[in-house]
Amino acid sequence: MFCELRNVRVMNISSQSRQVAISVRDLIVDYKQLRAVNNISFDAKAGEVTVVIGPNGAGKTSTMEVCSGVRAATSGKVSVLGLDPKKDRSKINQQIGVMLQDGGVYPSARVFEIAQHYCNLYDNRATANELLDAVDLTRQKKTSWRKLSGGEKQRLSLALALAAKPRIAFLDEPTSGVDIFGRDLIRRIVRQLASDGCAVIMATHELDEAQRVADHVLMFHNGSLVANAPLTELLNSAGEHKTLEDIFRSLANNSPVSNSRESQ
Amino acid sequence: MKILRSQLRQELTVMARNGEQLLLLVAIPVMLLIFFSQTDFLPTITGDKIDFLMPGILSLAVMSTAMVSLGIATGFERSYGVLKRLGTTPLGTRRLVLAKVCAICLIEIAQLVLLIIVGQLLGWNPNQINIAQVLVILLIGTSCFAGIGLTLAGRLRAEINLAAQNGLYLVLFLLGGILVSNDELPKTLGNVAQVLPSSLLSSLLRESFNNNTIVVTDAIALGGWALAMCGLAATTFKWSD
Image (tube, rainbow over all chains, first blue to last red; front, side):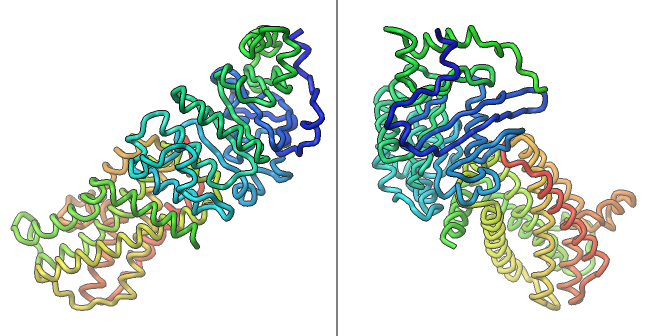
């Protein structure tokens, strides 16, 4: 039953009417001998939270990095807002926000200063005060990055991804190391972004978190997509009381590619 | 322009916050200048000590800023993912490099003004200061050392880069005709030293201050270093680990 979900593309009417923000076809990413991403295809739509799940090293970050223009694809076609993420990088960068897995912030930089700096980089921008207010870091304005707690760093990192008022937000493990209240806040922000029409692409290996926030799910295992379907469709097909974790375990165990990671 | 200004401000702020950078950029050159101009530890130097020391210390200041300071900071930015993240913003490579170049030029101007004031207080009285000539020499030297710093920063892990920059700084300092003339070194070492960029820069500045001339062969050699190292940095630099 779970295997049937691999190619499911059933969508409800409101989902069908949404614009495709990211289109990926036959994407392959190799690192020397290792095939990190193995011939995957999917669409991510504006106004939806597309959650990219899978264990560590499954190919989630590599896929996100190709879509956000950080990394080149080995082969395949990727279109972001109708543009090529490598060739049209300057146009795309004005419209996307990226939260990396690891900070990407000067350790000695202070919270307000770094938020202000990121706001200055975009034409259509939020203000630093708006950003810090949104992630509840107003009181830490003068604190340096290195003195923030793990959860505060994640929240600031998320705030920086929102500086552009993005049409697409790439969020890599936004809730990693964040306490329960921080998770609630991040979840609210992510849902609000989607409500505002932003295409949110969020990678995580925390399946319960994914289940709470996703509209659409991309399940990775060993570099391949083992499921690509709306969350509700996945859960309905799996049966009562099944969770994303149950579904993932079943699909991963049945994956024909589970032992094939060498690049051709 | 606003983007460039913002990145420049960020570069200068981050640099100013690092105490060890200030030590490297300001305290070490000033202390060396004062100490060795007021003591007799250096080998025999014909003429006034401060006249020999000043051009060498100015080259040391350029090397500290353009190579070590820029190289170490960039290496850590690469390791922390700062460059990778900035690469997803509209900043762009050109503005990032330009902001870094502007930052090191501003710091060098401050260093040079401070060193010249200290030098004057210690009795430095050059025969000539041909400002245009000195600026061209400093510009070539800055390009060369920035190229070396970025080549190392763009390939090595941050910690190894830190060690490599400091080690190279020490070698180029000792063999740079800064405290000890290359003529005082053993012959083979002296021959090697005189083609090193620190030595070429010291020698060019010394000739300019003393005789208002540019030694063409040295200028070509330093220009060659600059072209080679900037080219190497541009072709080998990796934006993330």
